[in-house]
Image 1 (cartoon, rainbow, N blue to C red):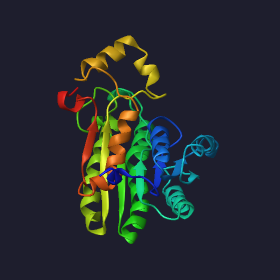
Image 2 (image 1 turned 135 degrees about the vertical axis):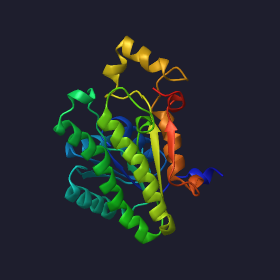
Image 3 (image 1 turned 90 degrees about the vertical axis):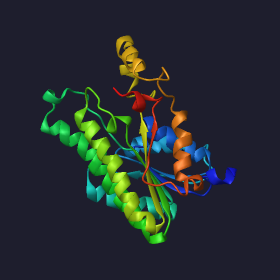
Image 4 (image 1 turned 60 degrees about the horizontal axis):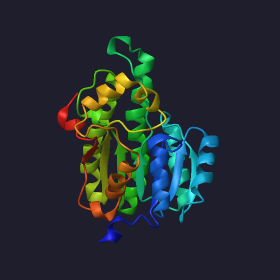
Length: 256
Protein backbone atom coordinates (compact mmCIF):
# COMPACT_ATOMS: atom_id res chain seq x y z
CA UNK A 1 0.00 0.00 0.00
CA UNK A 2 2.83 2.45 0.79
CA UNK A 3 4.02 2.08 -2.81
CA UNK A 4 0.86 3.88 -3.90
CA UNK A 5 2.41 7.10 -2.56
CA UNK A 6 5.87 6.48 -4.00
CA UNK A 7 7.45 9.48 -5.75
CA UNK A 8 10.67 7.66 -6.67
CA UNK A 9 11.57 8.23 -10.32
CA UNK A 10 8.60 10.53 -10.84
CA UNK A 11 9.53 13.48 -13.05
CA UNK A 12 7.72 16.57 -11.77
CA UNK A 13 7.67 20.19 -12.88
CA UNK A 14 6.99 22.82 -10.19
CA UNK A 15 6.25 26.42 -11.15
CA UNK A 16 6.81 29.27 -8.73
CA UNK A 17 9.44 27.08 -7.13
CA UNK A 18 11.75 29.63 -5.53
CA UNK A 19 9.71 30.61 -2.48
CA UNK A 20 6.70 29.87 -0.32
CA UNK A 21 4.47 26.94 -1.16
CA UNK A 22 6.28 26.06 -4.40
CA UNK A 23 9.70 25.97 -2.77
CA UNK A 24 8.46 23.82 0.11
CA UNK A 25 6.63 21.34 -2.10
CA UNK A 26 9.63 21.02 -4.41
CA UNK A 27 11.86 20.19 -1.45
CA UNK A 28 9.50 17.56 -0.06
CA UNK A 29 9.08 15.94 -3.47
CA UNK A 30 12.87 15.80 -3.84
CA UNK A 31 13.16 14.20 -0.41
CA UNK A 32 10.74 11.52 -1.59
CA UNK A 33 12.93 10.62 -4.55
CA UNK A 34 11.30 12.60 -7.34
CA UNK A 35 13.27 14.29 -10.09
CA UNK A 36 12.13 17.91 -10.13
CA UNK A 37 12.30 20.79 -12.58
CA UNK A 38 12.26 24.07 -10.64
CA UNK A 39 10.62 26.81 -12.68
CA UNK A 40 10.50 30.55 -12.03
CA UNK A 41 11.45 33.92 -13.47
CA UNK A 42 14.84 34.38 -11.78
CA UNK A 43 17.52 31.92 -12.81
CA UNK A 44 19.70 33.14 -9.93
CA UNK A 45 17.00 32.32 -7.37
CA UNK A 46 16.35 28.99 -9.06
CA UNK A 47 20.02 28.00 -8.96
CA UNK A 48 20.24 28.95 -5.29
CA UNK A 49 17.21 26.79 -4.55
CA UNK A 50 18.56 23.91 -6.64
CA UNK A 51 21.88 23.95 -4.79
CA UNK A 52 19.99 23.33 -1.54
CA UNK A 53 17.81 20.58 -2.97
CA UNK A 54 20.53 18.59 -4.71
CA UNK A 55 21.86 17.67 -1.30
CA UNK A 56 18.59 16.03 -0.25
CA UNK A 57 17.38 14.56 -3.53
CA UNK A 58 17.83 11.03 -4.80
CA UNK A 59 16.64 12.23 -8.20
CA UNK A 60 17.68 14.98 -10.58
CA UNK A 61 17.08 18.67 -9.87
CA UNK A 62 17.12 21.03 -12.84
CA UNK A 63 16.27 24.72 -13.22
CA UNK A 64 14.19 26.34 -15.94
CA UNK A 65 13.66 30.09 -16.33
CA UNK A 66 10.01 30.69 -17.20
CA UNK A 67 7.57 33.61 -17.02
CA UNK A 68 4.08 32.12 -16.91
CA UNK A 69 2.59 35.38 -18.21
CA UNK A 70 4.44 34.86 -21.52
CA UNK A 71 3.07 31.95 -23.56
CA UNK A 72 6.24 31.60 -25.63
CA UNK A 73 8.29 31.45 -22.43
CA UNK A 74 5.95 28.78 -21.03
CA UNK A 75 6.17 26.58 -24.11
CA UNK A 76 9.95 26.87 -24.28
CA UNK A 77 10.30 26.32 -20.53
CA UNK A 78 8.13 23.21 -20.40
CA UNK A 79 9.98 21.78 -23.41
CA UNK A 80 13.30 22.44 -21.66
CA UNK A 81 12.05 20.76 -18.48
CA UNK A 82 10.87 17.69 -20.37
CA UNK A 83 14.19 17.40 -22.16
CA UNK A 84 16.14 17.87 -18.95
CA UNK A 85 14.12 15.34 -16.97
CA UNK A 86 13.77 12.88 -19.83
CA UNK A 87 9.98 13.14 -19.69
CA UNK A 88 7.23 14.39 -17.40
CA UNK A 89 4.95 12.52 -15.01
CA UNK A 90 3.61 15.29 -12.79
CA UNK A 91 2.96 19.01 -12.62
CA UNK A 92 2.55 21.27 -9.60
CA UNK A 93 1.05 24.36 -11.24
CA UNK A 94 1.81 26.78 -8.44
CA UNK A 95 2.98 30.16 -9.79
CA UNK A 96 0.69 32.92 -8.60
CA UNK A 97 0.35 36.44 -7.29
CA UNK A 98 -2.17 38.44 -5.29
CA UNK A 99 -2.81 42.18 -5.04
CA UNK A 100 -4.83 42.95 -1.92
CA UNK A 101 -6.99 45.95 -2.74
CA UNK A 102 -10.66 46.80 -2.51
CA UNK A 103 -12.50 46.38 -5.82
CA UNK A 104 -12.98 50.14 -6.30
CA UNK A 105 -9.21 50.66 -6.01
CA UNK A 106 -8.26 48.04 -8.61
CA UNK A 107 -6.66 49.25 -11.84
CA UNK A 108 -6.62 47.49 -15.19
CA UNK A 109 -2.91 46.83 -14.67
CA UNK A 110 -3.63 45.25 -11.27
CA UNK A 111 -6.30 43.02 -12.80
CA UNK A 112 -4.10 41.92 -15.69
CA UNK A 113 -1.16 41.17 -13.38
CA UNK A 114 -3.23 38.84 -11.22
CA UNK A 115 -5.35 37.16 -13.90
CA UNK A 116 -2.52 36.77 -16.41
CA UNK A 117 -0.38 35.07 -13.76
CA UNK A 118 -2.93 33.03 -11.82
CA UNK A 119 -5.31 31.92 -14.57
CA UNK A 120 -3.86 32.52 -18.02
CA UNK A 121 -0.44 31.35 -16.88
CA UNK A 122 -1.86 28.28 -15.16
CA UNK A 123 -3.77 27.29 -18.29
CA UNK A 124 -0.85 27.56 -20.68
CA UNK A 125 1.48 25.68 -18.34
CA UNK A 126 -1.16 22.94 -18.09
CA UNK A 127 -1.60 22.97 -21.86
CA UNK A 128 2.11 22.58 -22.56
CA UNK A 129 2.54 19.84 -19.95
CA UNK A 130 -0.72 18.20 -20.98
CA UNK A 131 0.36 17.88 -24.59
CA UNK A 132 3.28 15.70 -23.48
CA UNK A 133 1.30 13.74 -20.91
CA UNK A 134 -1.58 13.02 -23.28
CA UNK A 135 0.91 11.84 -25.87
CA UNK A 136 2.55 9.39 -23.48
CA UNK A 137 -0.78 8.21 -22.03
CA UNK A 138 -0.32 9.12 -18.37
CA UNK A 139 0.35 12.00 -16.01
CA UNK A 140 -1.02 13.88 -13.01
CA UNK A 141 -1.46 17.60 -12.46
CA UNK A 142 -2.12 19.59 -9.30
CA UNK A 143 -3.22 23.17 -9.92
CA UNK A 144 -2.78 25.38 -6.88
CA UNK A 145 -6.07 27.24 -6.47
CA UNK A 146 -7.38 28.75 -3.22
CA UNK A 147 -10.30 28.46 -0.87
CA UNK A 148 -10.93 32.02 -2.13
CA UNK A 149 -12.01 30.50 -5.42
CA UNK A 150 -14.93 28.83 -3.64
CA UNK A 151 -16.04 31.32 -0.98
CA UNK A 152 -16.24 35.11 -1.18
CA UNK A 153 -13.42 37.20 0.23
CA UNK A 154 -13.69 40.84 1.30
CA UNK A 155 -10.65 41.90 -0.74
CA UNK A 156 -8.87 40.44 -3.73
CA UNK A 157 -11.67 40.16 -6.28
CA UNK A 158 -9.27 39.48 -9.16
CA UNK A 159 -7.48 36.78 -7.16
CA UNK A 160 -10.77 35.13 -6.19
CA UNK A 161 -12.01 35.26 -9.79
CA UNK A 162 -8.75 33.81 -11.12
CA UNK A 163 -8.70 30.99 -8.57
CA UNK A 164 -12.36 30.17 -9.25
CA UNK A 165 -11.32 29.97 -12.88
CA UNK A 166 -8.50 27.59 -11.97
CA UNK A 167 -10.99 25.33 -10.19
CA UNK A 168 -13.32 25.17 -13.18
CA UNK A 169 -10.42 24.89 -15.60
CA UNK A 170 -9.33 21.87 -13.56
CA UNK A 171 -12.75 20.24 -14.01
CA UNK A 172 -12.80 20.91 -17.74
CA UNK A 173 -9.27 19.63 -18.38
CA UNK A 174 -9.99 16.56 -16.24
CA UNK A 175 -12.99 15.71 -18.44
CA UNK A 176 -11.07 16.33 -21.66
CA UNK A 177 -7.93 14.40 -20.72
CA UNK A 178 -9.30 11.51 -18.67
CA UNK A 179 -9.45 9.27 -21.72
CA UNK A 180 -5.77 10.07 -22.35
CA UNK A 181 -4.73 8.77 -18.92
CA UNK A 182 -4.08 12.25 -17.51
CA UNK A 183 -5.56 13.25 -14.15
CA UNK A 184 -6.08 16.93 -13.30
CA UNK A 185 -6.90 18.05 -9.76
CA UNK A 186 -6.51 21.22 -7.71
CA UNK A 187 -5.55 22.20 -4.19
CA UNK A 188 -7.36 24.97 -2.33
CA UNK A 189 -5.27 26.34 0.56
CA UNK A 190 -6.32 28.99 3.08
CA UNK A 191 -3.69 30.91 5.08
CA UNK A 192 -0.32 29.20 5.43
CA UNK A 193 2.87 30.51 6.97
CA UNK A 194 5.03 31.77 4.08
CA UNK A 195 7.32 34.78 3.57
CA UNK A 196 4.46 36.50 1.73
CA UNK A 197 1.89 36.03 4.49
CA UNK A 198 4.19 36.66 7.46
CA UNK A 199 3.72 40.47 7.41
CA UNK A 200 -0.06 40.05 7.35
CA UNK A 201 -0.13 37.43 10.09
CA UNK A 202 2.19 39.56 12.24
CA UNK A 203 -0.67 42.03 12.65
CA UNK A 204 -2.57 40.81 15.75
CA UNK A 205 -5.89 42.25 14.58
CA UNK A 206 -5.55 40.71 11.11
CA UNK A 207 -4.56 37.34 12.55
CA UNK A 208 -7.46 37.38 15.02
CA UNK A 209 -9.87 38.08 12.16
CA UNK A 210 -8.47 35.15 10.14
CA UNK A 211 -8.58 32.75 13.07
CA UNK A 212 -12.16 33.74 13.90
CA UNK A 213 -13.16 32.47 10.44
CA UNK A 214 -11.16 29.26 10.61
CA UNK A 215 -12.92 26.43 12.49
CA UNK A 216 -9.60 24.81 13.45
CA UNK A 217 -8.52 28.12 14.98
CA UNK A 218 -5.05 28.37 13.42
CA UNK A 219 -3.23 28.96 10.15
CA UNK A 220 -1.67 26.06 8.28
CA UNK A 221 1.89 24.78 8.33
CA UNK A 222 3.46 24.16 4.92
CA UNK A 223 4.06 20.48 5.67
CA UNK A 224 0.28 20.09 5.88
CA UNK A 225 0.13 20.66 2.11
CA UNK A 226 2.65 17.94 1.30
CA UNK A 227 0.44 14.91 1.95
CA UNK A 228 -2.44 16.20 -0.18
CA UNK A 229 -0.11 17.03 -3.09
CA UNK A 230 1.72 13.69 -2.90
CA UNK A 231 -1.66 11.92 -2.78
CA UNK A 232 -2.98 13.72 -5.87
CA UNK A 233 0.24 13.09 -7.82
CA UNK A 234 0.51 9.46 -6.77
CA UNK A 235 -1.09 6.16 -7.75
CA UNK A 236 -3.14 6.37 -4.55
CA UNK A 237 -5.33 8.89 -6.42
CA UNK A 238 -5.54 6.86 -9.62
CA UNK A 239 -9.37 7.20 -9.73
CA UNK A 240 -9.47 10.85 -8.64
CA UNK A 241 -9.73 13.62 -11.22
CA UNK A 242 -11.44 16.98 -11.60
CA UNK A 243 -11.50 17.61 -7.84
CA UNK A 244 -10.42 20.55 -5.72
CA UNK A 245 -9.14 19.43 -2.33
CA UNK A 246 -9.53 22.28 0.18
CA UNK A 247 -6.74 22.34 2.76
CA UNK A 248 -8.13 25.15 4.82
CA UNK A 249 -8.80 24.23 8.44
CA UNK A 250 -12.50 24.13 7.62
CA UNK A 251 -12.72 27.74 6.39
CA UNK A 252 -14.49 26.69 3.17
CA UNK A 253 -17.26 25.18 5.25
CA UNK A 254 -17.60 28.22 7.51
CA UNK A 255 -17.31 30.90 4.80
CA UNK A 256 -15.98 34.44 5.06
